[in-house]
Length: 230
Image (cartoon, rainbow, N blue to C red; front, side, top):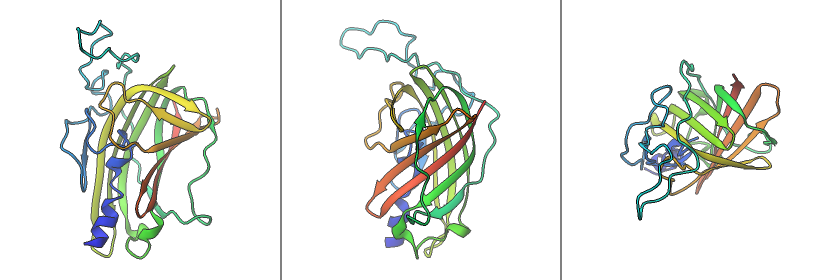
């Protein structure tokens, strides 16, 4: 049972609201240990409002929260291919995610490579070489607004057998940048109770990386998304 708990802590539903940090964010659904039942995610190209049902900036009724500054109507991407992630142990300084350097996020990005860094303390319990999965992800950044989508399904090989993890999340709202740190406000969705740490690199060469970090009692888990700018 201890092994199951360790690997359950890696549930990618904790990585975004995106996974990219929400077990049960409005407008998304997640599977895996501890995930809450929620509405289905909008998914690529399904609805330009992210499935939020928010108004088009109409004045809020008395006592109701004001509509978000973001209009929640960025258009999602379609036709984005699945990628097979690489699984590694987070084992610094030998193996670790690259340092993010920041930059300017603007435009449409499709993820064409993904790397999962399992917590260091799961060594001897998990087997990255025998783990498999698929990732489908994209992001749109326009001014101070974002639309981020991530669908992932992982089978983590472990001494307790195959551990299934997955997430299917979609988030819109506003974003801010401080050096390499990326903050999402989830204005068009319910903000998750526990947020992950996001950082990024956009060097202006047509490529970008988003690194999603989740801290657990068994060490840090990272999901590195490498993307091409459309």
